[in-house]
Image (tube, rainbow, N blue to C red; front, top):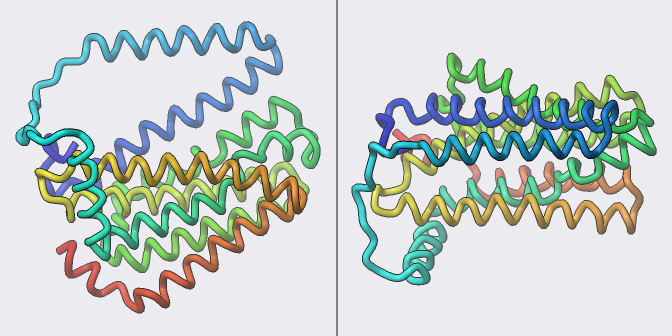
Length: 277
């Protein structure tokens, strides 16, 4: 994306790209839950296979008109280690990635949604589909607003507020016993998360030199992928030890503590704005 899009449009392009992904995240869980609930597992998975086949066809016919400007000459291990060293040596980039990693690690309420749908809210698979779609709906609507009102005016402040809002939404969802209130809290969870995604993605594109973008992208994917997967494991372990509701409240509370710790560690976001501009 950074090679195809002018630098001044990074934030806007990230917003549109993420909106498309989040739109699919709304349609997928909602339709999956409805298909499973009304037609059974066989029809549900058949539709999934058809959708994956369409995706493979789209990839097969994709035409790349933007060949890479930088061709690496070293092996993959050296290349990846250079990416890790670059991120580790950049205070701002490391702070942004670490904040996202630990907030998602402790805020992984998504992994426990089936338990909430079945045992706490008692809405079944149809309700689970709506619960899974609610964060994506919040993300899409927020990203649509962000195409006109960019969060990059004061990015570090906005990032901290967004992650704090994400943590509060997680806590409220964990305490809710009403299905519709739970949908609202999950909606706001997705909305706040989408703001942090836009800011993080834009910062990474702006602060990364052209020849390092692939490696930094790989490191970023490791951060995001590990935080989501290990966060789901953390949610399951804490739910086993503490119970489902305390586990979600604990995760949201830890997210808020991480925001406070990060704020005290960095003190101010003025140097971030200077680096970006």
